[in-house]
Length: 176
Image (cartoon, rainbow, N blue to C red):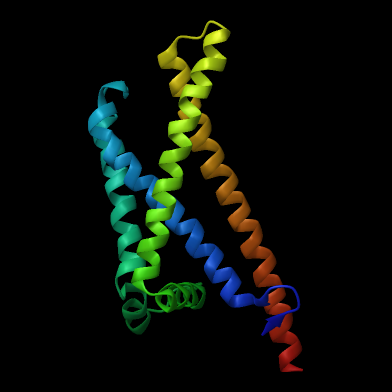
């Protein structure tokens, strides 16, 4: 199954999904690492919810990327969309854990650098408008989180849908 522009469609889709998953997993790790320093900024009662959500996110990512959970489940239970999950797992396992570790490290460094550079710039710009430094920093981090998550998720979904449509069309053409 080859695409004229990109080579193998299924590998491209798998690599894109792995990139999105690693980015999301690294954001969960960052949230977990910063929670001890920023827990006082959360509204009352939110600390356990945020802590639980980030721990679940980190553990879920590790279970999907770091263990043979999906193939094991595939042998025990058939779920809707399981073929897609198994293809996703195969694309991850073909990369190898060393490559995944390097990708996580690059993503972590990239995210930290974005935060380091964006927060002071936002404080300068918002400070010129009279916004307090703490609010400017919070607005900068919220903007970063929203643009990273929303744009990344939308882009990933659109790319996956386009790729699966091309893949399905190729499979139909191969069957004829």
